Amino acid sequence: MKRVVPLIIFSSILFLLFTSVALGQVQTRLRVIRASNVGSNVDASLRDVHKDLGSLFSFTSYRLLRDENLNLSPNQPVSISAREGRIIIEITLVGLHRSVSELKIRVTREGKDTLNTQIRLSPGRTVLIGGPKVRDGVIIYALSANF
Amino acid sequence: MKYSCSSISRLKEKYFDQEATDKEKLLVENHLQDCAACQDALKSMEELRALIKSPVEEALQKEDFPWVWQNIERKIRLQEKQPWWQSIRSWLDISPLFKRKVWIPAAATAAVLLFITTQIIFKNTSSYPDASVVEYVESETNNVMVYDLEKAKVTVIWLFEGSEEEALPS
Image (cartoon, rainbow over all chains, first blue to last red; front, side):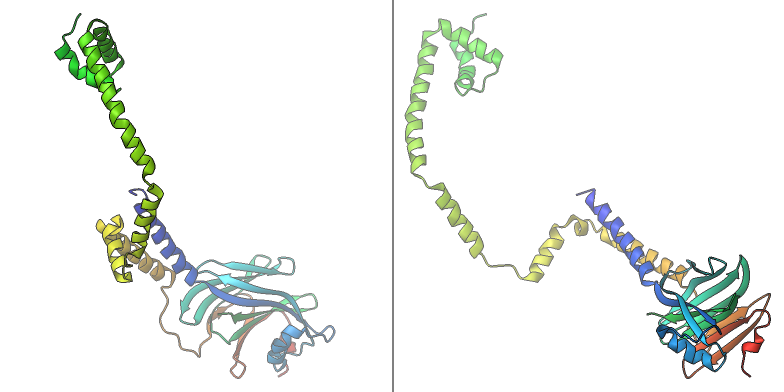
């Protein structure tokens, strides 16, 4: 019994720590899109993006390259690459307040920083980060809260 | 060395009850070889044991032990169940965890650790205005546009690489 009591206390502390960290996780959806003027195909899952960007840009084709559900933990960067690793987006959860998550985003091309930003993402809101050029178009990242 | 009957009498009882050590057994057996009185006494004790043993064994055979145990079990089951609060109270009394009050420092430690951890992880937890989605944006090499489509709840951050500006309609 003498050995069991400290074991119970230790596991309780570990459990509390684990749950506090687990509760701090944020689920975010990231879609990596290639927009171009080659062809006129718009993937069914990208109709919202096409509609939103239609008034700003004249791309005729939207193709979904990756659709990821990211489990972001505080201060732990998650990287997603496009164009065989030449363009990388790195997302870090830096803050969480009720239903608003604060994300630090870094876009690099061939190891060089091209964009650094910090955004506040809330449920129902989408942030589109676009512009990095690829051979026949541009890369667009669509970030939306999944919590 | 010869022992008198009185000095051997205690050992004799142990010998009779089969509780004597090997050395004691040897002493008693040596004495019995030469002492007829002690031989008779031992014989009488054995007869007396046989006399008592047989009626006890008969009585035991008559007694139905499983039935007695069934009765006891039934009485235990019939006992009124403790209410839940009394069960908790008795558990708290029995549990060494609460008896020693170890849980007080343990709970305090856990609470402090939890508080520190959450403070470290989420130090920027002041209330945010809903309007500003982009806190900052920077690019050393290219122009960047930030555009809010409030109707659709969409924010666009666009990086202009090279001669892409012509993609903008107006």
